[in-house]
Image 1 (cartoon, rainbow, N blue to C red):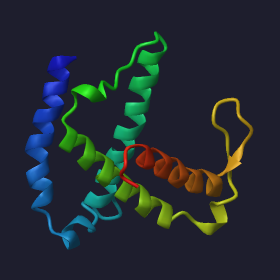
Image 2: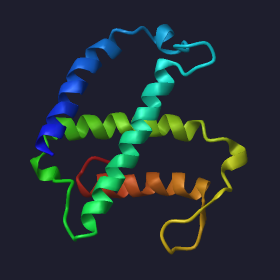
Image 3: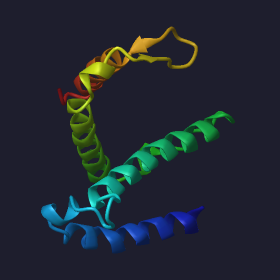
Image 4: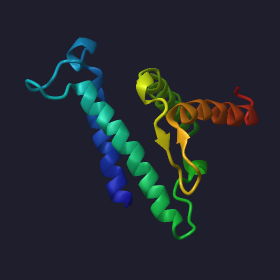
Length: 136
């Protein structure tokens, strides 16, 4: 897994400067006629990273292990990831269709809550934990 992780980091180091060199206007253009733009591809990869992160953590926790190892992560990396991910989440929340806010969402065996509740509860949850570490 260490080798796989190193390959991922190498890929990021190669791709990030190339992605940063693409202009905002170019990033919005479809790569192929009727296809996805670079923005759409990167957003898809963000969703994929998030989903896979959850899968990795859940798969390991089945054996009562903790895969996240945040204590070993670089503090600036964690802060940058937190800030960037939450900026993106704010963008997603801002564009949730009003017609979908009452969509029922079930988490585990709990009774369903609405998408509106989930979004608002996320902010409440975030504020609670930021308050615990003196950052709210």
